[in-house]
Amino acid sequence: MDLTLPPKVTPRAFERLAEINAGGAAKALRVAVEGGGCSGFQYEITLEDIAAAEGDLVLESEGQKVLIDQVSLPFLSNAVIDFSDELIGARFVINNPNASSSCGCGTSFSM
Image (cartoon, rainbow, N blue to C red; front, side, top):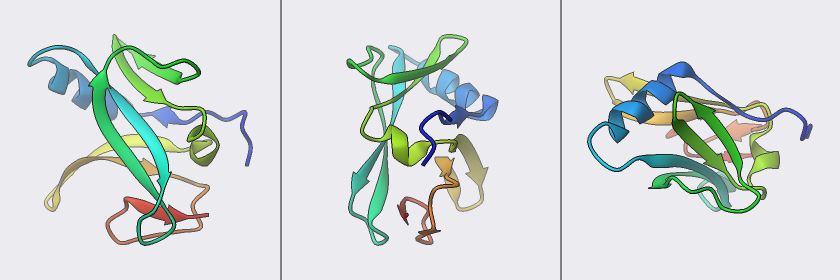
């Protein structure tokens, strides 16, 4: 894995985060990779306090922040964090070129 290529966040994902934050206290979107899921690893996407933890990669646009911890970063190298609004639902999605396969729901993957 090439650690020099940080993940990217699409304008659409930042726009959706801004919409979420318009209703109250600003939150950051945390994207993490954990063991588990039907394919070996799973994405954990949460809203949390805006303060980054030590070592976090902070991706920012127009005051909106996406946080990624150092342990998850190698798994997300060159990935794209996007927001999808389809008939089946609206959610943040990750297009990860490092994943060799993923489950049907898109929340777990293997490498």
